[in-house]
Amino acid sequence: MASKSSRETTAFATRAKLKALSKKQFLKSRVLTIEQWGMSVGVRQLSVAEKMHKLPQSPEEGEDLGIEGVVAILSICLVDEDGEQLFDDGDTDFLMQQSDEVLQQLLTAALEINGMNSEALENIRKNSSEGQSESSVSA
Image (tube, rainbow, N blue to C red; front, side):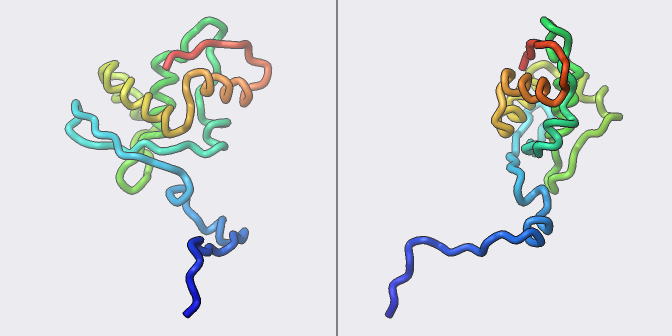
């Protein structure tokens, strides 16, 4: 009887196999319970394209990202149980009416799952918007 290798074998990727994958299969997500809402939400990882094209533009030097920037990030990262985006541009008012505590909890989870801190977020925005001046970001 032949002994099995301790290493599992996996199939090599092909272009067709990779393109057949959905975002949910290769972007991480986690569930976050929001006590104030009495329910949970999904927080998902952004793709490189989303980081480059959907994150808010850098504010002017010395200015914070601001509540609008925080809300923009959350509207991209928050998903339902099927991985579908929970909010769109029309839902900005709802998010802006939430407490600082809720927004901070959501933002912290969004930054963590994306491997970002406020400095990394700033660098991504700077790299995706040529010619912008340096800025600070509050997260």
